[in-house]
Image (cartoon, rainbow, N blue to C red):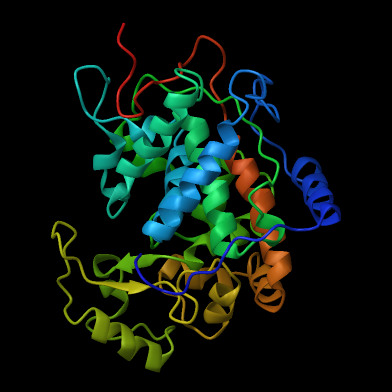
Length: 347
């Protein structure tokens, strides 16, 4: 996820923000059953917490543009597996029960975890032991999305409740594989997975959330089944030939350092926009799970509407991202605020 055009984040008018806030908190239910999450959670304990995250995300984006995409994927992977609790960030060590989720096959290609440490270190300097790693992931995803989208309803000051706690254990690889759909998943499987993760908006919300595939790239190991021995009949022929040029053999592997890949969107590869949906309608969906959105009668109407209206896409994506970010937060006594996101706190 390197290169591509970059655009500055912009602020939206107060009326737009208020409208977005109403949508976010009235139209999607959230998983905060214990009521721990709240707006301005750190207003007394660490007043600059959200500003610090935003500053760090912006600085990292200007140094390494692909970090903004990484934050989005990290939040999806963390929140889809049981809870938004930063279990994803735990390294395998004697201090962390289980094997790191980062080593699961579903996490192949994830990167930039070291920059989470950069953000966390800035917060620790300001407010030691106060801001959870789970909140770092959620806020970084929000602010990264805002930069990639160029503002609008995804502006960096979009309301997001905080107060998440960090897990003391990593999820099992079996849980990761079960919770996160793969690149060949059916629409029914994807709908069920997001519903289990606390996103109540059904086909509309899922169609919006998969719009995150507007940015970033996909490794050839996840593409070659659609290209060899013959290009899938559901793929635009010219696009299929382009992909064969990116992935010239059918034996792409996931364990090489220099992995061949194709960008999710060739037109605006580093902009979170509705070009993703236009590509689907033109039979240029990179992954099978993407293209299926344009074919399934439950999701096709939303693909068509989002392809025609970028503001509508941004609005629905923002609402669904907030709902996902609040999936099943840990209650008091169930978690902690890690000082180092990679390890549980010493006993």
